[in-house]
Image (cartoon, rainbow, N blue to C red; front, side, top):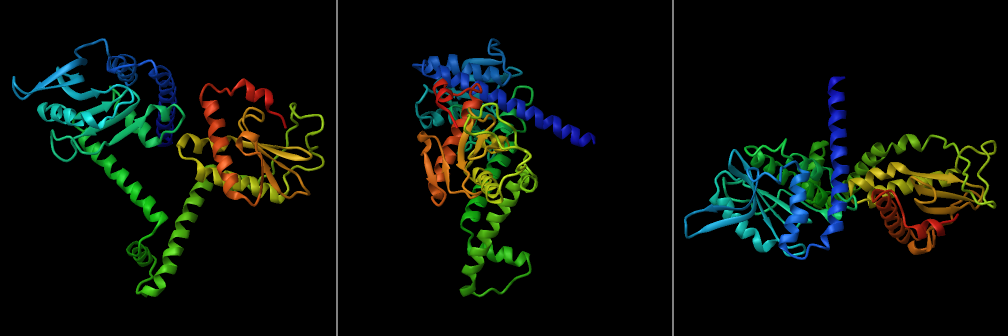
Length: 397
C-alpha cells in the first residue's frame, strides 16, 4: 500500500513538473522573437531556464558568467555560464544567438570540459534548443552525443516525451548529482539506442532476429525459403502487441462493451434533438466499432505523450441524425461528425479547413485530417484552454 502511494505521489510530481515545463516553454517561445542577439538570448531565455530548474541566478557563487578554465595563461577556455558547487564548476553552459547552429560551439564546450576536471555536464543552447552532454565514456572527455535534448517550441505545443521530462527533473538543483551524471547519461544513451533499434525491428524484423524469437517459443530449424513468412508473422505480432498495450492503456477493451448513456445537449440545434434515452441507450454496432477504431488510430497517429494521454478525453454525443465526436468540449473541441444513415457509417464530416466530407473508404485522407484536427484541438486547450473566437462563432452542428 505504501509502495503504491509513493508511486502515485512520484507520478503526480512528474505530471506537475511536466505541466510547469510546458507553461514555461510557452512563455519562452513568446519572448524569443525579441532576442536579437546572444546577450538577449542569455538574459531573457537562458537565465530564466536556469532559474526554472532551481538555480539562484542572482548568486555569482552559484551561477557564474564568463567562467574561465585554463590550461595556461596562453590557452584560456571560457564558457558563458558555469554552475558552481563548493566554488568549483560542475556544469558548463555555452550559449548561441536564438536560431544559430549549435554545432559550431561544441568544440569550445569540449575544450572547457577537458580543462576543468570538476565539470561533469556540458550544455549548449540557443535559448530554445537545449543539448546536454556528459563524460560517460572517459572522464573529462565530453561525449559525442547528447544524452538529453529538447526544443522549447515543441514543448510549448505539448510535444514532449516522458523520458525527457524525467531527465530534466533529475537535473534540478535539488536533485542534480554531479558524481552520478556520467553513469546516468550512459544509461540514457543506451536507452535511446534500444528504443531506436526496437522500433526498427518492429517495422522491419531481420531474419536473425526472427530466428531468435522463434527459438524462444520452441521453433528451430526453419528453412530459408520459409523464413519470409515468419518475418511477416513476427511483424504482425509486433503490431498486435502494440495494439494490446494501447487498448489496455486507453481502457478501450472495457469501454467497447459498455453502453454509452446519451446526454441531452443544451447546444443542440432545433433540427437535431438529442436522442431520447427511452428510444436507445447505445450507438449502433457499426457506429460504436467505428468510434472505437478512431481512438485506436489516434493512438498510432499521436506523436507525443500529451497527445496520447489526450485520447482519454475524446468523447461523443449522439443525435437523431448524426454523432458528434469531440475532444473535451463538444463545440470548442469538435473533431468531426458522422451522419446517421440507417446505423451505417458512410462518411466522416470534418470542418472545411480539415477536409470537409470524406467517404469512409478514403482511410488515408481521414487519418490525415484526424491527425491535424486532433493536434490543433489539443494544442488549443493546452495553450490556455481556448480556441480562436472565429472558430467558436463558426462552429455549428
